[in-house]
Image (cartoon, rainbow, N blue to C red):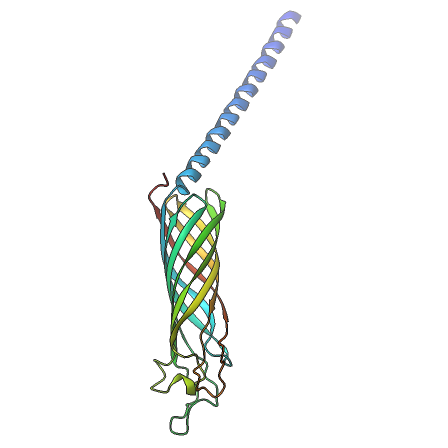
Length: 238
């Protein structure tokens, strides 16, 4: 009986050891398979050649040298051509719309400004530059962008015929513009993502030279906001 008990104990220990070893091997195999799947997904996601996107956003914009900033809503559309998985060339167009906060002393004796008169203004930046991807994970990515170009500004189209020089808003013109941003992407699929982009837009509009308080050499307007939208990827980097 004693030998039988010893033999039974040895078999039990051996079986438990074998089961533990099998479990360990299965866990390692599952982890390896999972890591391989994640790497395949990452490779598939960030080997796309093209990226197109669009959406809307919000911007705080100063419509005149001595005026308060106003809120603007905007749209954006962009196309990116990736030279490498981390480096691409971007082209973008935006449109921003808001209402200028006009000063109380604006207007002329024959064209007075009424209380709460806030004419509609708009800006249309056409930008190009580079994008560099800092983080490339299965479900999210982080990229930095730097762009330059021109921005078409329309500041007295909604002013009921009152020229910009009497409203102290910028003169309607096409001027150099710049932008930097950080793209924060959440990937639904390898070819489809949701994007949030905190952005800075620098514009260089002038006041009309005949304005009573002109800025002879112009100025740099620092405008901050955020864009959101959808990104679609296609093509492959060879």
